[in-house]
Image (cartoon, rainbow, N blue to C red; front, side):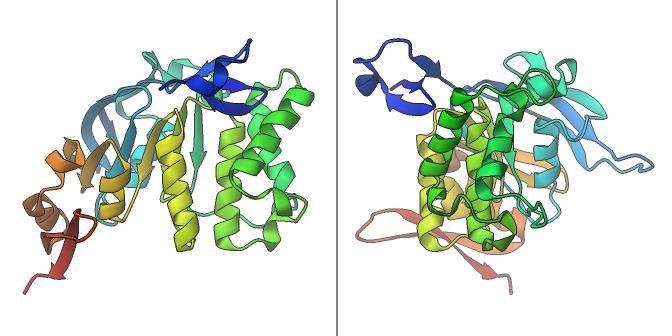
Length: 285
């Protein structure tokens, strides 16, 4: 089902039938073509010949051991690092042929850690998401910006403390605010680096539901493999900068692949009454 946007709010196709002047919301395609990355003054490739294509509106989960290159790969997608070899395309266009502002209109990112010394309120932080859409120094879109910011605050349930200083919030509250800022950016692609870090169980589930419901292309690093399998359309396994596999969780997350990648003994157990497969792990003897 398509989703539509009107005055900063999202409606389903059925709900939007009674409106005029609505805007279709959709994700954009992502293509990573033979990408390698070595940092300046380093002869070692951090990422090595990685290629994949992601269709608009799909959710890709990136998993792998610590140091596998997950965060580094995400940095390529939001134009923080430029590939040493290869390129990254959004909607068929190389992001390094786009301006930083135009890239920011397409790609929003939520990182693991956030500085707490902004000296800004929650509302002001979320409003920063509108910056790429402003024209000229200090430009603003007035009522339109306010509508989008209000919608993002409401969606992430941070409106009740929108006038509090960002630095006074808990880790979980800060994470939700940063997701709200990303939504205010109105991107086609949302990049999330461990989005459930610091969140309690309820808010973890809310973030995962948001990932499933948003009509965007979403790429997220995740530590929890069962969470990735349950949430993502496709998953990618990284190890030592190499892409070991990409595809549906059923195809990629075999017990053998997980055991080899993480150097554990992985197996599946069938849960009742949910009738779901659950990956379990033990240290190798």
